[in-house]
Image (cartoon, rainbow, N blue to C red; front, top):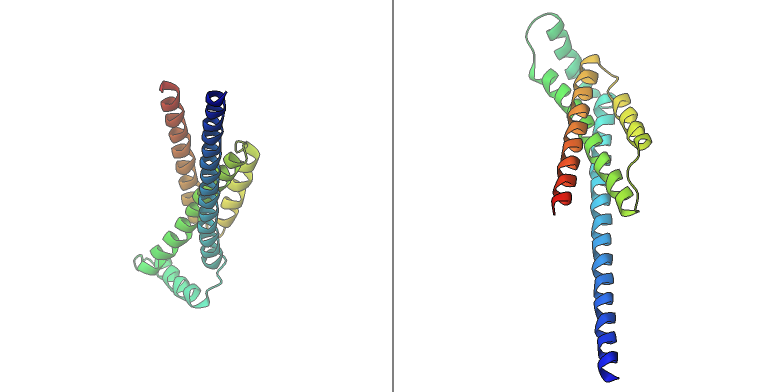
Length: 163
């Protein structure tokens, strides 16, 4: 009898250790999802500040630079920086929000649906409606991010099938 009880005790200890490891893993996944959500929120705020034209001094500089571009006086650094800040903030918002939502859905035991992805895509492209150039660059950037995620997911699935 003592041998059976000892095996039962070791089995219970192993189960307890596995449950602790699962809890630690879920906690770290939740923390990772939360951090990526915060990063996405920071990029959303940056996007709204620059795409919403909320910074008056910056708007004046960009308007001056745009006049120089229209008059064929060259492409000022401020104009290029404005486009880069707007597009990078929108694309980074999409990327980090996509990762955060997908991680959270995986943590809760589900997959990210097409509806959620479509809503995220619409929110992202609405941010880019301030300029046609920014919209085109953001649409291309979002397409690249989606293609990258699609191929990375396929690669991971293939690696898991082989093992």
